[in-house]
Length: 251
Ligand code: HEC
Ligand code: HEC
Image (cartoon, rainbow, N blue to C red; front, side, top):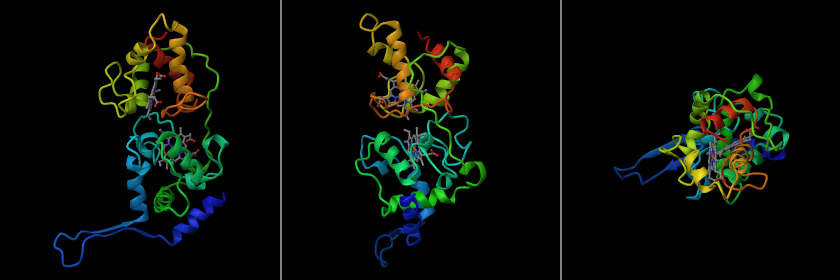
């Protein structure tokens, strides 16, 4: 909570960011005034905030600012309207908003150094999040239940699974089978490329299935590594996951 207060207080002195470029006699002069809120809104959608070419995600890849704005997408992170008022984050594992954001910058966006409360980007992001309509339910802690056990869900309906692929996986992995339109080059075409990389003979059917279950439920955590976010039970139920695996014809 300490850094959260610090962030808000620091913000009071930083109403304006952006700047004036060029000099006054120059016909090319563009005056760029942006409020902290506008700056934060742009940063929210900008992968370059991680300051590494290794990152392709923006905050908006995984979070809606306002619930519903990403259509029917199943995004791994919670909507962020109301986040400044929540008592805790990451399913109760974090109480500090800036730290909650820094986890994402570090684990998913591979940013080397965390934001501090003095960073202009952190202040602009705070101003933006604070500007979102976030009273009532939006200010409640968001449930987040990671799945540790690696028991595959029961098989489901492949037709529904196709839609789950589009809503939950397609943003990064592109179209099923071909990978067309993928956001991250190293995100494999699902399920084909992952199955090719785990050939039968070297792997059993059960192990190949487990690659999907473990990756989806643990993301880069619990010893797996990589930049994929985990999908909690709230975001992707076992029933939906079963539909998805049946669409992939797994096992
Ligand atoms: C690759 C996906 C991904 C990216 C990119 C990402 N996040 Fe997250 N974020 C998550 C997941 C997963 C969680 C944990 C679930 C949850 O609590 O929302 C999380 C949690 C959070 C939380 C805590 C929310 C809560 O109420 O528990 C905040 C705040 C947050 N992220 C902000 C950001 C911001 C700001 C950015 C951009 C700088 C960002 N995230 C980028 C996936 C991502
Ligand atoms: C925010 C981007 C993102 C989303 C959304 C996403 N993935 Fe991934 N996934 C990746 C990346 C990047 C990799 C490459 C390895 C790494 O960096 O984690 C990957 C790798 C994988 C792998 C390969 C694991 C291995 O060890 O060979 C599987 C399987 C997988 N994802 C399944 C899924 C499924 C199923 C979904 C939807 C429920 C999904 N992913 C959603 C980014 C994403």
